[in-house]
Image 1 (cartoon, rainbow over the protein chains, first blue to last red):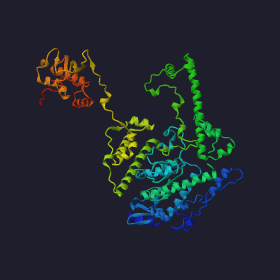
Image 2: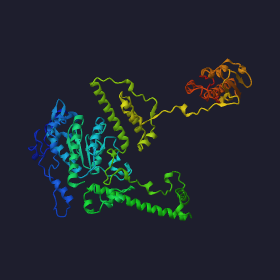
Image 3: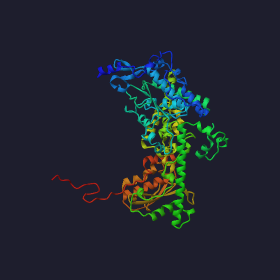
Image 4: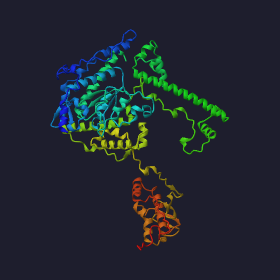
Length: 261
Length: 374
């Protein structure tokens, strides 16, 4: 078992696009990848100024400059690279791993940096468009941190028992027609009992995009913007909270500035 | 903030007018484009729901008026009870389950309501913990955890500066108890389950157990209520005065099947009269001790006179009845401290024990016949 895991771990570098591999940065120079946005602008004659602004913002690869928010060294200092033991590694996480040391798995921070920038960029765009963002976490030691982080950026948090009908049967759960969150940010995709959080599946069912910090024992399949990284250490959780909060606040700032909303 | 004025008016059920209501409708098309698709979808659903509910309510009202006419009553004064009775009369059913019976309910009871107060115009909830389903309850748990952390932080700073804790300040919460689940539900305006309440009490007890909990006294006491002494709830009758100005109190006491009517006179010399006889009415020492005990306990042995009339039962029952009656009368003569002492001594408790009946197949109430193995 240990032997074949090691062989799998040696096949790293699969998760990163070839074109981006050379542009992946060193710890001192944060730079957004050169991927072009898939969305192509239509002709701008029939659009209102509001819609024009929205389209212009999407053209830019990093409109909110989220790449400046952190460096790989920051991630290292917050112990984001520390995974669990080899035996608990999820098959789908193997592309994101750097290697292992004495049975403990190490996550590739260069890849993490890239995924994290994409996730922060997406979060900032959602905030820019006035979307409802829901922070989800189920570790008791970080409940207060996550709830405070959500409050400070004017968004929402759910660190408690998740009722099955929260997203899929919201009218009955809340007793009235509810507007569902437009983005779910999982700071830990596992629930108590090391099962995947119901919210991951339900958000996929309801076509709600998700951003999720996936540790080595998690399954990143259903997460729209997975961020491979440590989700157990308080230092890492504090860092993620800080980064997502900054991204959201930047998005909202630009919303006020450009859309006057 | 510029709102789409017409939409805002239809959505809001507030009775006050906002600045938005008075704003000029200059570019309604432009304004609506500023909303994202998600917001638009929510508003469309909300409007559709409002329209649907209006339709249902209109149909219901028409149906109600028809029903009143069928029953030959005035539609204006047709109450809900009349309507239920009419349905029961017109649609008789042999079924027992109330949910299976034909009913005509107001649409707001049948379909879920759209709570206008919890969201703003764009559907964003006001409370950060809205999606948990119990925002107020979980906010309290959040506060408790934060306060415990703050107190720990404060304690570590105190120890850093070598400041010892003033033990006099440590709060004792003995005179109060936690709000009951019903009272707590009323306070937070949310319906919670028993395990939610139990967890809340456990969390609060952790906060209370912290040595520095006095710093959060206000927060803690807002979820506690003072224990009201049972004594304070009782009203002790005031002393009456006869023609000579002698204070007296009349009481009735019962024990087993005996009833005693006792008058205790103040400014006396310790005279005891039972059914026009002396204390020697009771030949048994124990019975005599029983009736003297309340006087001796409260220290009025030689200073009050007792006149008792007793009937029914036997010696023990009669003496017990007189004792209880004397204790209840003495409450008016002594101070509240002594009354509390008497209560603790058991003098003010009506002994409810009665003779248990003999059962068939047994020798007595509890005693069984001799058990033979074979």
